[in-house]
Image 1 (cartoon, helix red, strand yellow):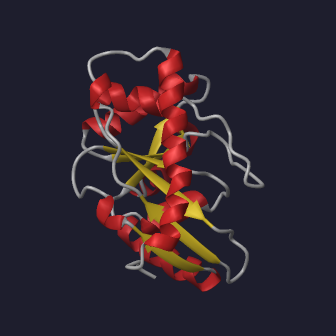
Image 2 (tube, rainbow, N blue to C red):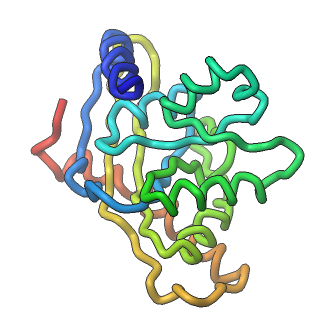
Image 3 (cartoon, rainbow, N blue to C red):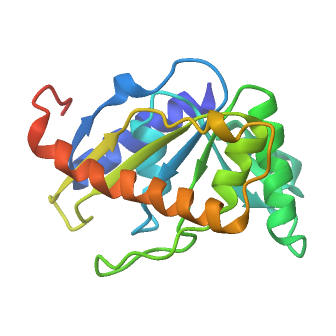
Length: 202
């Protein structure tokens, strides 16, 4: 309930600042475990992801934020899942598997940190390893535009990508890197749809 309320509030606030166009939300499966691969250019990206995605998204938050039970309950309802600092990627991966095991959806930025000035970063292989082991598809998503006052932001949801041919086995690092880079190629390639799809939701 809190997630839905927060989504409405953020839609109002963010749409006052920017104009949004959302394309391809029909590509998002309504049920089942999913990974969402977003590009990452701003601290506003997680907010925009949450307010435009038809599924409730989970995201990582440091475990210390959950020490206060009241505040911890609030951010849990908003989709936050705790990750213990010092355990590195292992803690994050375990948390992600728990979300997927329960049929949830997890937001991941495969490039890690924010990408500025249009320059791409080398994708990390973790999302591919998770998708392969958990046997779940990945929905590529592109956030295009900037967050300057009254500027236009376009969010494009692509069709789910499946890696079924790798289920039951562990891809070597070279293959995993190739697949991760290919996934980000799909994400950035979605920009072509801005001009080819007309039935967009504004």
